[in-house]
Length: 132
Image 1 (cartoon, rainbow, N blue to C red):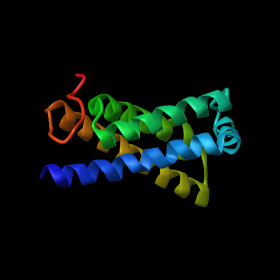
Image 2 (image 1 turned 45 degrees about the vertical axis):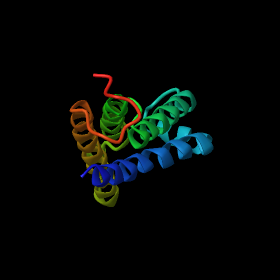
Image 3 (image 1 turned 120 degrees about the horizontal axis):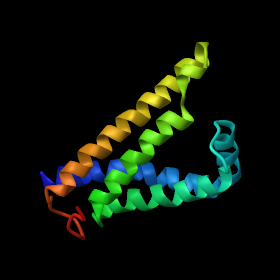
């Protein structure tokens, strides 16, 4: 079962590693999008979030303080849902598209919370033990 859990961790963490790299390599475009959603100042917030989710994704994959990494990713996903995808502000097709993204981020938040609980129980195949 540890191998199955490791595969799940890798798949979950890779989503955030890729997103973190995107935040950092496409900083201007991502910052503009963040500012259009009311997140200001966009550039520093995008850079900070990019570093945090990159570190969180790597922490989950490698098992380095993976409980803290999973909890951080859960918080990020919840904030992304509420701040970046407020579907209730839109109508028609745009509302539907934002609702999909909102629900995806809430699901990722839930997955992060499950990972947090999993890591605090001391699972195998990690480089460090849980921080909490």
